[in-house]
Image 1: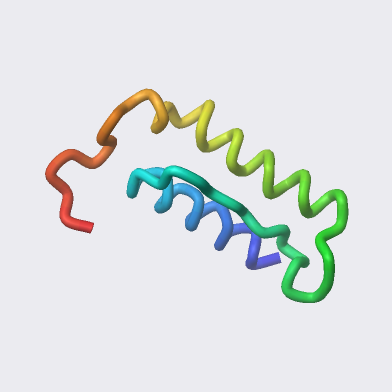
Image 2: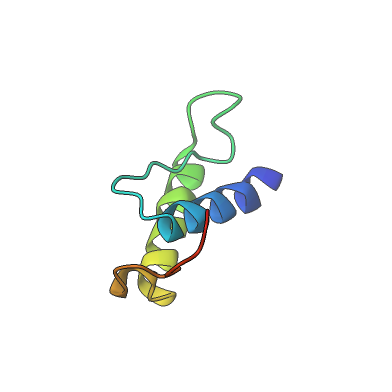
Length: 67
């Protein structure tokens, strides 16, 4: 279950870094093919960060930041 938090943080960091493409793994993908619930949660993580944070509305959300 710790992977849920990892994926959320990695998604946010990649988005802030200006990624062009992003794949989020399901929390159980390290063990086997992801379950439908895990795949759905990974997708919803991307959607929430994109839609509710407003990060994608800004060309450079961290202007002048050294990453």
